Length: 467
Image 1 (tube, rainbow, N blue to C red):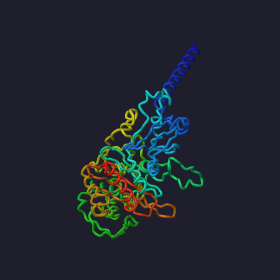
Image 2 (cartoon, rainbow, N blue to C red):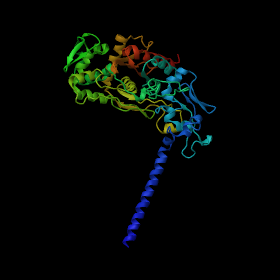
Image 3 (tube, rainbow, N blue to C red):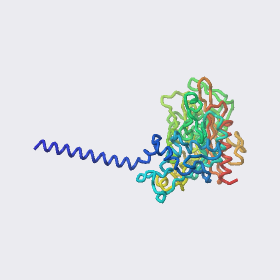
Image 4 (cartoon, rainbow, N blue to C red):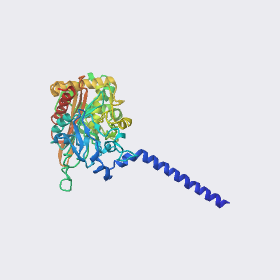
């Protein structure tokens, strides 16, 4: 009797395990079938049976960025546009994992869990996809970026969330992708990485926005204080150097001149706790989403930091790292009183499935990154920097608030810079926030990233206003 009972229990356990396994398998299949199909090792969908029957991808104006012609995937007729949008659209290799053709192959190819790739046309909701990017704006940014080692430029509508420009270099022509081997791998190092989404850079003086916000919210009367810059100051046993000797300045002047001495002193006065709190609040180490693709987190690590290192962290050096998309989001938040709109790149008319997944349509409202009053003050500082230091005619008559930065990095034995310009436009017809960065240059941010920002913003305005 006991033997029969043991066998019955054993049979019961096996049946329960089998049923549990079947439920798990069915659930995994229903939830992840499209993702499994989309994997690069699936030769059927990535080859002639996949992208070769994929729908078209167009920009915001209907310009074809990718399409299938005679079972062959072809890209925009302009080579510069093809290279500018390589990391957004992707190519046949599918090596750029964040690109639309990699992320949404099942939607582009009309894949169905029930029908596979053979769903009757009458049942399909459409395989074409419309993006928010503007081909002309991306081309303008690419032409300004293409001669640098690497870099990124992103421009987005901070009221709607639409990304008009997303350009990453290095790049190549998707119509004739390179064969990368040991002889040329250095030339193409990092070419599959979308720097807009998946890279971080040393911020340099653009980080002074964070330090200024912390000072405004934590040091009473800081806007009325006078500071002194002699070009060099010993803090915490080491020198803090500045680009010049600015003499006696207030915070507005220090921000415009990008004075390292003042912001180093402020970081030390605030202390690591308050600096860290503001960096976290403003999203430095946060992860953001662009149509379902996560951005790389930045970094503000000041654990076990000494006073000199804290001082340098306040001017955007030490180990500080920031992501380009986040910098554009932060500028959009400043423009909107501290609260940002999530950026997106897939238009709302790109299929009901994408709408159901929340990957298209208008951008959702994000968090409050800084107080409205702080956002107003920071915006004023950025506006004065353009008027007094960069030149108010820089952006072709647009009313822009901006900050430049030059992150000093070391590449081998040669010192290189990460040049930045970030900001936003306050004009009603062009509510655009931007972040541009170039890597591997001896230039300052104004002269390197500044010309990229200028090219992208002027063309974005033309596209939006139909000039």
